[in-house]
Image (cartoon, rainbow, N blue to C red; front, side, top):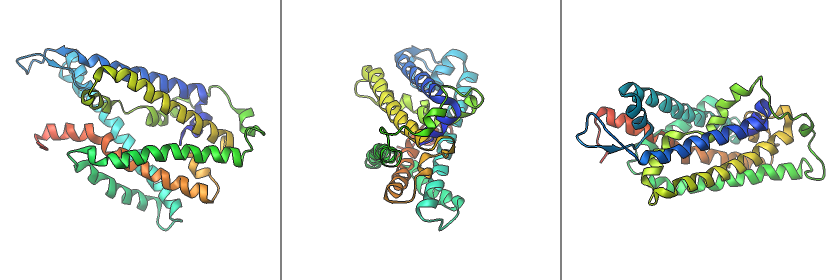
Length: 278
């Protein structure tokens, strides 16, 4: 949803570059099939996480640094979930409460999902979230055709679009990371796959789908509203059935992603405290 704003801030080339960089980083996860000599273990053990890679290369300082970077990224991403919920719930419920009130209410519902030992119970909500994302693309594209008159009439914002905006490019990468990052969850996905040798193929296909989705919704949002595009393009949609549907769909996604995003942090904290969730 923020890709429309990012197209304004950094240009289309910057968004595309970020997607390719993170896909290449994620592909490197396939290298974790090798073993390493852990000084605290009598036998060699496989590299199962980015923290293991850091420790194998640089010892305990490497593990601590990688842990700090990844956990900061994940916690920051989840904070954006709260902001996203607050923005859209406030509009969806016609400003019945403040944005901060809705953010706290969303946090009160999402945080308890971290207590689940088995995240498979969230599979239904996750599937609903995937359907919501695809439906949201359809709503924005409908607005582009029905309101913007595309392709008969080219939106005026396209004439002012630049390939790269160097002045705001560094700042915009923070929001782009919200779309393409989250690398700390990749080891859990890799090690839990029935056929890990298909990891790279799966990841490339997934990034292709996500990239195409972002290209459509980001391009349509910027084409519709140009420099006036909001931080989330759904906030620009005119009042009506389409915008209400889009707002409702947006609120589903964070609930389906919050527990998975925070799972590495939860497991790391449990390990540090010596808690056995089994």
